[in-house]
Image 1 (cartoon, rainbow, N blue to C red):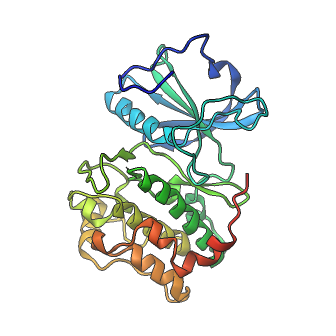
Image 2 (cartoon, rainbow, N blue to C red):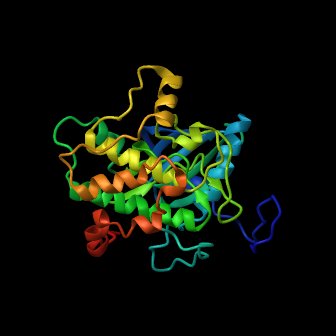
Amino acid sequence: GGGGGGGRPSRHAGKPRDIRSELVLLEGDLGKGASGVVRKAVHLPTLQLVAIKHVRIHDREKRQLMVRELKTLYQNIVPIDARAPKATASPAPLPASPFVVEFYDAYTAVDAGMVSIVMEYMNGGSLQGLVEARGPRPSEPQLASIAYQALEGLAFLHARHQIHRDIKPANLLCSRDGAVKLADFGIARQLADTWAQAKTFVGTLIYMAPERIESEAYSYPSDIWSLGLSLLTIAHGEFPYSTSGGYWTLSRAIKDDPAPVVRPEFSDAFRDFVAQCLEKSPMARPRAIDLLDHPFVAEVRRSFRYRE
């Protein structure tokens, strides 16, 4: 099936493969994302664990979220049996990133009124678990590894004119061997040009950049703010702003108060890295690709080996 613009998927010759018949759902939910419930399943031909996000589509708003999600994930599509020797799957439209959750397939169940997205399963859960964990905080080398991998994911998306728009610890998924990937593009947005602006108001308020709370036009720097705030929260084990006063108190604090700072017991490199991410003015924040040169992540970047 070639490219072509139209709104309908092209009809392929021959019988299309139905991934549904190859999946066995497992017990329990993995979580709820911005646009649906996530379940764990086994893909029988490869015996691979996968995550399946089920989204009800009678809800028009959720359908739109879903379409956006599929567009973003399509940048990172990987045939589920790509590692099998005889795979002759068509190549991805753009190279996939090891720092973004892989998308394998999607299908609709009209009778159940949902769209289901089949994607990579991350066995370590989300970094929100680290925020809530009792006991010792992550070490600086661990924080640097998280920062580096998240930056690589953001640099990949931003180079493809995507804003993630919902970077927070719960959307940074990890595996037990230390891999970290960006997930839940329920509200990612395709940008038409290099410095286009999105003026829609969605996302997770508490990790939102000041310009988004002001409902000003925003762009890639809003993801950098959210990453900095996520790292500070993971390092401290608590969110730096008070949330007890409700929406207006919190949004006023994010807009009007000085940006939070990393506690003095951390290294100057980490404190500076987060301070650059949390510049109140979006134009003052470095790009993801520039932050990859920051001393805080330099050592990880030199030694990083992606583990298959």
